[in-house]
Image (cartoon, rainbow, N blue to C red; front, side):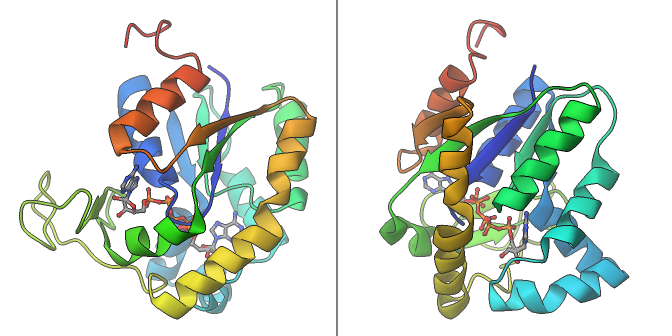
Amino acid sequence: MVDIVLLGAPGAGKGTQAQILQKRFGYRQISTGDLLRRHRADGTALGKDAEGYMQRGELVPDDLIIKMVEGELGGGQAVLFDGFPRTVAQAEALDAFLDASGRGKPLAVYFNIARALLEDRLLGRWTNPRNGRVYNEKYDPPKTLGIDDEDGGPLVQRDDDKPGTIAKRLDVFEAQTMPLVQYYAHAGRLDEIDAAAPVDAVAHQLLHALDLEHAHGS
Ligand code: AP5
């Protein structure tokens, strides 16, 4: 299996689908958002540097992100990059790093969805901070609001899932991350899926795009 970049706006469903693929096919998920939130919770120097950017809905500087991701890479498992790369500089650094380590360049899948649908998804999101499992009050509610069905622990709402910060994150996505659609399309390494569909239908499209259906008997 090759490494995969899940590319899409905040709330497009990257984390939701990464969890499904990780469980079914044994990919390793690298979510830069989750890694940064862990650094913040642990009070590391990187967590302190990242905090202000995240609270304002801005991107954390490329050099900090690239160093953090390189520290995570290694081993033979295929990786699902969730929320990384987010700038052309990050994509170039990832290509160079994977090439140099003999893994080859990753494939990207663009989660295409209208901006108007995203605020609703983000305002209703509840997350298990221990493992990244996500629910949605409206579209995929847990049996008891605020409690994870699977481990019975508390779910939290993210401090950047507020209307003003969501709008800023969506603006930042359009300005700084959308150019990656062209970057991967020009390289012949882009697939696109309709991320406005229900979760199961998005998962089906993703398996098709990655050609995992037949290979794994799904
Ligand atoms: P990050 O944590 O990466 O957040 P994001 O990109 O804004 O993405 P989200 O986690 O909000 O969305 P998602 O697509 O994973 O959606 P989800 O599956 O949860 O980044 C946070 C911050 O960290 C950034 O703002 C930045 O400051 C910093 N950062 C991170 N990476 C960085 C980088 N590389 N460079 C620089 N800075 C970086 O789904 C959302 C909701 O919708 C859930 O409630 C879910 O249940 C629901 N849902 C999912 N799919 C569907 C569906 N098909 N139908 C209905 N509901 C659905």
